[in-house]
Length: 230
Image (tube, rainbow, N blue to C red; front, side, top):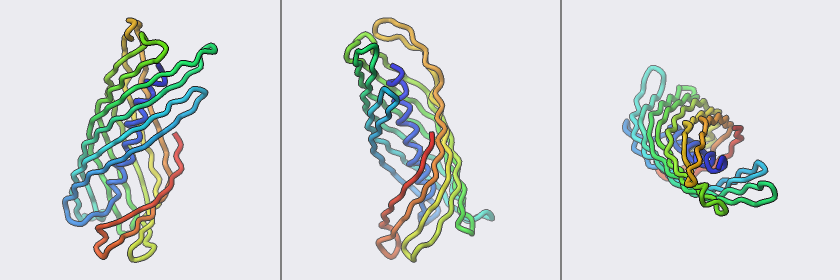
């Protein structure tokens, strides 16, 4: 049951990456509308394991202006996602398997400032609701369905480096925090459980190389890598 509870929080934490990537993108014009889609698969092993697949989407609307600080972008976004997961636990020689479905929806605001030195600073805050439906194959009475509130924030700094006229390297460091609020629940067997608040603190150090494929850089591709600690 604990594995099923934690699996739901993974999805909201991972979706933050798409929002911060949107904040770093350079677009033309003062108003920027962007839709981002992200799909992923994660397997977490801790003696037990959780294997999850998810699909996330974020729609953002931002305004960009030249200010005394440089190129400043402020905006708001809406996010939503769904996923499925499988859990495995070994209890007293008995293999217990479970599965679940998650959905979340929420929104937030973000800020990004690109200085004249091509150094940038970014921040965001978010708030939403997470639904988690969990079932245990061997213990049908252990099923539960929860709806929990999540919220979080992030801070980041980075440096953009021109590699060629059409290619740019972005080196960054960011920290992300997400909290999923606790919940009192009853299982199908009328058993009362209490899940405490769950906090995630994630540090990410990485880089991304973006290549433009046309004169106006409307069509772009990128490749990147990052070291993360949570």
